[in-house]
Amino acid sequence: MSSSAKHALYRGIGIGESAVYGKLRFLGSKKSTPAPQFRDRQTEERDFRDTLDRARAETEALRKRTLASAGAEAAAIFEIHEMLLSDPDFIDLVISGISKGLPAAVAVSEAGESLAAMFESIDDEYLSARAADMRDIASRVRAILLGESDYSESGDSSDIIVARDLTPAETAKLDPDRVAGFVTFAGSVNSHTAILARAMDIPALIRAEEFSSDLNGAPAILDARTSTLSVFPTPEEMSDFADELRRRDAEKSRLRTLASLPAVTKSGKKIALYANIGSLPEAEAAYKSGAEGIGLFRSEFLFIGREDLPSEEEQFRAYREAARLFADRPGPVVIRTLDIGADKVLPALHLGIEDNPALGSRGIRLCLAHPELFRAQLRAILRASAFGKTAIMLPMISTASEIAATRKLLSEEKNRLRFEEVAFDESIELGIMIETPAAAIMARELGRECDFFSVGTNDLFQYTLAADRQNQSLSYLYTEGGEAVMRLIRMAADGIHASGDGKWLGICGEMAADTALTEQLISLGADELSVSPPYIARVKERIREID
Image (cartoon, rainbow, N blue to C red):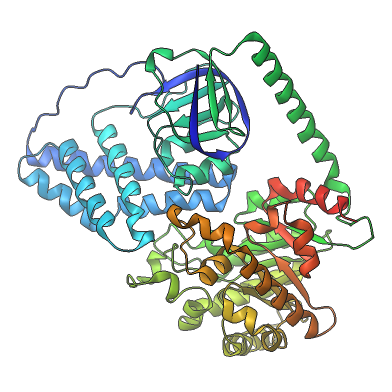
């Protein structure tokens, strides 16, 4: 028998035994848990606060594990969870429930559902999406209070998980070396679970047809290419798919041999192939993958998920390590200055909730509004530039005045470092991200003020089409509206190239990793492509195939 799904999250193949995933048990039936009984207010409140501490510690461990294995974007999910676990509204609601005689576990469930419903009612895509996060952390706190485990390391290798749904925490705990894939009956291709599945390279299907729990342990084949799960496949099918898996493993091995080869078309055109990273472990992975430089170093990983701001010294050490690592590569380490706002929050700044955060104080706008924070980061980057070629990139630029204001601050910090006799690269490049239609339209003027452009295609799509990229119902716009974005990329390329010799255009959004678009992006004028480390070999191979 087989089950089909509406969406594939990661188009791979998995072969193994189906493992039916209960809500709080990984394998096997869930033991019935007696209803919690209220003891006394002091005991219930003490247990709740102790449990919060444990939940925060577990979430921090999950964040670190995910950062190392799946990167900064995936790890940011658990930064949101850490903030929700410390949300005064959540804590106050639980304490209020306990004061009314509810056991802590029941009070947690009711508080979580109440806040989730509130988030869902908000007419804002980012905030309404927090409902799932709220339910996730409430479920985990309740499980700890009741002594339940939400995950077991038991089970054979090559399990194919079958579940109603998986929370981000449950997904992050899956071992890619043991789990061959997973199938869920609910979910969204833009959910946090989807982000994790792609980052962890786990084949996955969502919104599948129902699957009987009686088939737990049955041999199965998950083919995300055709969005199907086949249970009790024939020996011939098992043999064919096993052969396909071996071919894919051989293909991965072959691609690894490309690491030392240049990204050059058959006609001899050299394309700089850099990496997008958000942490030092990712920088190491990028280096091993053959990246010639770092096209996008997301500096937010130093800021998010903490109550204080990182010092200049802490930032300097992180940037210096990346600069040292790539000192023998031809490309720079391009550090994007703090890009906080919209879907990324910074507790240390105590920023208020904006009516429309995607169009609010984010990126360069926020940095210029907090000059001391910005100065510290600029100084840290300048100091790191003495240890390897480094560049500065500004996010969310819309006007030339924003570049001019940054150059003024940068010049002042350079003068201070000279006075202090601190070494830095006097010729450090300053670039901007092209994420708004305004920046692309004004590319010739903006190009005179900086050294390079890097197109952030994710936001450029969103702002050009006026469509939230997390809204699944608007996904058709991203297919039909591609030509408009391509024209803006052409305008940006023409603008920067007309502004002076040696100035260059890079692409650092998800589009850069789509090998079906590689040739078109190069024809539009891209001099550099920057992708996540796992995509470097595939993109390099495609570049080398182009005439």
